[in-house]
Image 1 (cartoon, helix red, strand yellow):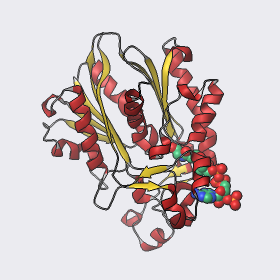
Image 2 (spheres, rainbow, N blue to C red):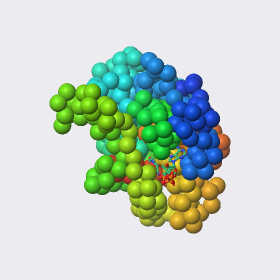
Image 3 (cartoon, rainbow, N blue to C red):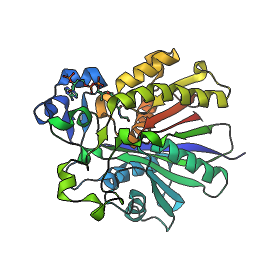
Length: 331
Ligand code: UT7
């Protein structure tokens, strides 16, 4: 039976490091508050002129090199992002052009923090059905350019960083690879974590002085609402992936959750009755990079020897939508 396996991974973050101390004056915050509420010590922010496609290109080149594939081998590009360089088209077509690929299918999916697993699920269907042999999947976001970088936005502004992670997905006939994916959403909470404009409901897409003055183009979040749902949905969707594959947490080498907040990760580990050593975290280095957290964390967890060939891992994400998802993988 054909399955989908990850044959290469890579990630890229901007060079510009923003430490908690760098935000103190800008947002009237302090290192102690940020560390204790989120676990974040620093994050990377792009500079003017640097966008999601630039980070994605570097991440993709690394993943392709690790997989030993060339641009001619790729037969589809999927990018999970809410941060296209331009309002449209998306990042995927820019990658197709910048990497000199053939005229293959290339599209973005706008799912926020769960986008990488949604993309994994889509890619898995194309590969299992035999329609594609090699897919480039990227998770990337650059939310630093829509953060309110003033004291009024400090509850959200300190949490997010920019980045990109990429994987190459290919067919395999052995017993490793993606075992299952599980996707969920609950749109009634869309306003708990959203950016209102530019939007098609508004004249001129809402790019008008009065709406900009009301900061309606900024990332808005009801942090407590997000926290409450996240700590319930993460364990639920992880359990769903375990049950589907007759696995228990004892069979899992590493759970790789979306890096939203260290307190969420700790609460999830506690609810599931596992130690923090089973649940990967690198949020202190990058903050919440939205769709990029999982592929970046997968790269680093693998490099750190947290899992290796033959191990089972679980990916899980929760975020804007609300949307949440998990995947069970045998490496
Ligand atoms: O992918 C999903 C992404 N989202 C998340 O992961 C967010 C989930 N939510 C959270 O992690 C938490 O709700 C936050 C970290 C965002 C906020 O923590 P909280 O314990 O819910 O804080 P709060 O919003 O209730 O604010 C507590 C206090 C307030 O001051 P007062 O009213 O008690 O005097 C805020 O004004 O902390 C203040 N505050 C800050 N102080 C310093 C809010 N943001 C900051 C800040 N620096 N950056």
